[in-house]
Image (cartoon, rainbow, N blue to C red; front, side, top):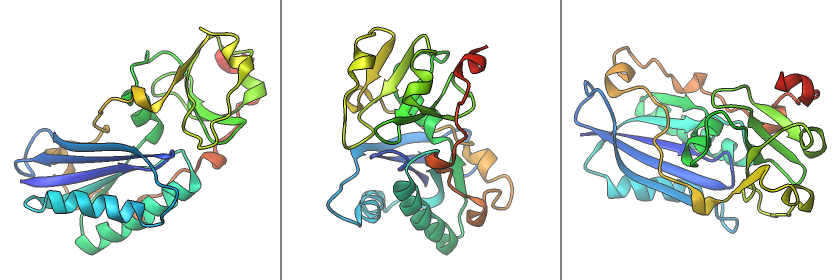
Length: 226
């Protein structure tokens, strides 16, 4: 058996997924274990510990690849996971496959593909996309509030969970999501057969994060809706 570990740390929640397959010629991965937990704030070794514990529980499987959510998202979380997985991929000489963090988290919630999905960067700044597969934008609260007809807003992705009465007063225009609504979901990754058909098509040194604060701003929401 071979295994792949997929991680996402773009929000204050850690997603760690273990996938297994019978061989490198298999046509799909099978879900073996998934962890969705808040990232601890009282320790620095949380990512190393979580990955090692997962590897120890699955020591009988050969680690054949890694996958990582590239963002957009929090600077500190992405920096920690990228540093660790890039090092591990280099030492093990295995592929490091990037995937979209926002598309992954969107799929973890029971929401419509055609509705906007927003998650928080800080108290007054969100980032998200209008539809599944849409372009990511940074969305200042005052600029998009009056222009989006309805949206799914993941609000507990910021530790200082400040409420917005102006949003809540317009319920049900805005559907508030929280971590209790998260479902298990496998990131969108190539199959083992596709992944290993070439010599390491996903080298670790070509895998880079996308930080939320680097996103372009949606400066004209009315025009963006058309």
